Image 1 (cartoon, rainbow, N blue to C red):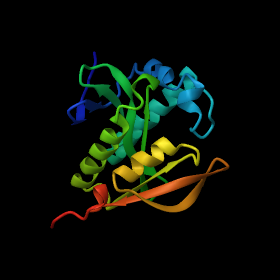
Image 2 (tube, rainbow, N blue to C red):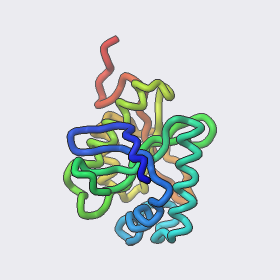
Image 3 (tube, one colour):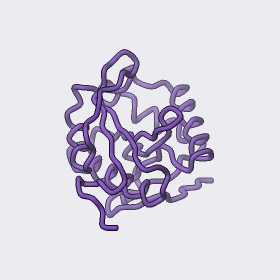
Length: 178
């Protein structure tokens, strides 16, 4: 039985909660060097690692009401993961990873922008962060497009990553009308 609980939808994307049997999809997403080169351990994921991440995302969703979600195209095909989850004890972090065949179509920007609006309208917190490997200029462009501001770099697993922050009311770089 598949739950497909819809969290958020855009014209081209659907964010749904993972199902228990989705580890193979997640492992497939992170099965190449292209999709893992900017992740902390930069090695393709094993099925065990994918299962471990899913367990963590189920726990985050239950605890915080937000996590990294399964990302589907409008036709229902699996294209990646995207969401906002707790980072440390007092911050939330935006993260996403898309299948190679959908890169360059604006889907990461669409996903990040939709998540920011959803996160702030749900009043999870007044800000969130994101970070990228210093060589991941495509993701840095996405984060700037949705209005995130660069802040002090952050050390993640021995790499000094470029870090960004977005505060409620500053999405797309413009304060919201109150």
